[in-house]
Length: 124
Image (cartoon, rainbow, N blue to C red; front, side, top):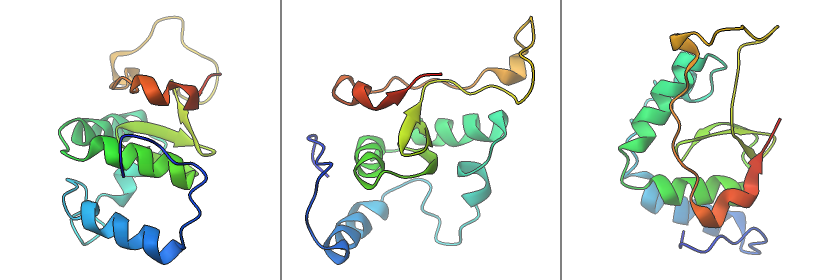
């Protein structure tokens, strides 16, 4: 993907998959055996932070994020950001009533969203 996001990409899915395969082999999460799936698609804040930490060191983080936005990924951590409903979720908290004092284990790693993609942030 380029630095410019194309949300209305009219290419055939096979072309998009071929493009994804070319850069996906460089991804730190691409182990080939799916052992990180539970971490990248978890609702646990600790797992989400672990996935984001791996993304933060990945050489193709921006390409992954742009690709996820173009595909409108429904959920998971992509390019260092948490997705829900095809949009970037700014914050996630535990289910139920919010605690009066934030627990250290509830602090999710924050990776800044690039300026040109901030319009895709979903707020509560």
